[in-house]
Length: 493
Image 1 (tube, rainbow, N blue to C red):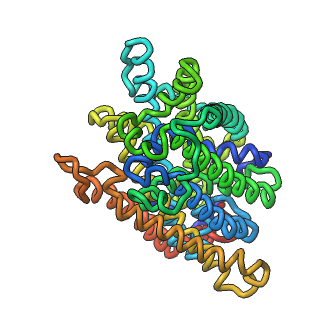
Image 2: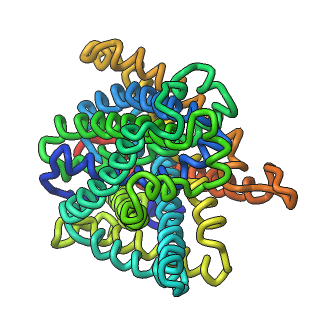
Image 3: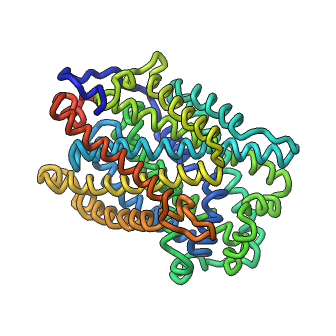
């Protein structure tokens, strides 16, 4: 296994991250991870056409409720496990160190895959936008490289720099989305304003399971609040408030704006209209706020993609930093640079991204149809699996120790975590069942199949989990102090 598990030395704490992030700073970063405007342009058309049509807004509302239920146990556990690491830490404490380390590697796979997908899509989208307005065709990989350099620079610096950048970018993408939505409603939409989207018959129309899957994917990143624990001001207060705030903001934003776009296209015509015009965001923007609004929307979609790339880069770097500190990965990853940032882990994240982008460029992969679809699809499945595992870990952590149960409300640590396990388990099952569709695994006739691509991506996912699980056992045999540090307070993480 990894060379860092050899020997019997005690794990050293290469450096603890520090900072003074406020609730809003962390909320901006985790909401940017979900890329609200990018969700509108990339997910809404799919949710309307192959999901549950006019009922898609209800899927966002339902997933928001499930994630709020999950957040209760999740944030309660942050008070009992005062360490960063999010999925890694909580799964390890609830389900054991081997599963915790397996979850860490699956989390890294999840976030790095989505970063790769959006880096490629950034180059593609900017290239198409430039060509559309000027007729000049710029290769996507050159534009992705420019973004990669900017992300690497910001990720190497103190997290508060990233927080400020993400705060500005997130504000403008939310602002343009809300402006379009309110103007649509004020104008009466395509055929008047109605609440059809929230009727049970609308939610159950089409393929509601697919609507749930795409809605769940749109919340990716909200849980990363706990990763910034060491960099937060007053963590016991900041982390729970930021988590609840992020879920509520995303749920309200997605439910409201998706409903507004249903009104813009018409409740009865939304499936047909979205099929005919998958880029309806820009069409609606021009129709309701004019040509300038269309141009601004194109610009803000690009800045939204940039923001989500930066947010995921920071998350991956902090996972690598955590694993370096417990010696599951080389210890240099745990170093903190002079700017109070996980400098080595950030540079490593940039290097991993660059290697895959270069390899994909030489392989001739399409940045949108292949790279974005494959990587984001795999990242989505990985995310839902570890989210479900984390909800189970929260329940087990409190259920097995009477003193922990007595210290908290039964609703917080037993009832709501069980509901979260059920809800997220269903979302996870739906995603696995529809994984070929998620990654675009189709035959020559366009039929969705469970073929070589789906199988290969699942093998990658399983391999990451197995590697972490086995490495934990090797650590237990060869370096027990390092193994113990995965969960011991004050060590490693």
